[in-house]
Image (cartoon, rainbow, N blue to C red; front, side, top):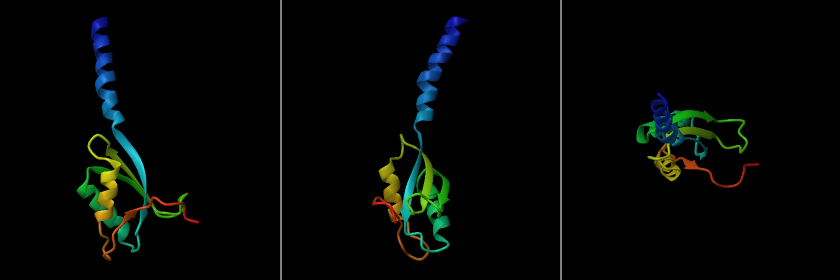
Length: 107
């Protein structure tokens, strides 16, 4: 019985924990949200292009002053850089491209 519970413990440690550790919650500051349809377009395109889950998009009252997009994704299959490149490729309904903000805080 002890061997069985020890085996289950090892399986949990070496299999389940790495699976849960690869899921990342990341925030991106977004430039280029200029029309009322922009947030929906960005969210739907990201979910379509990449295997990410949009947890939220805060348009106002953010610390930086930029809209903040919160995503959840598997870091073992998608990198932060891939997400940023995909965001830059997405075009809003008005024909403008989005961009991830990397500069200083907005005053």
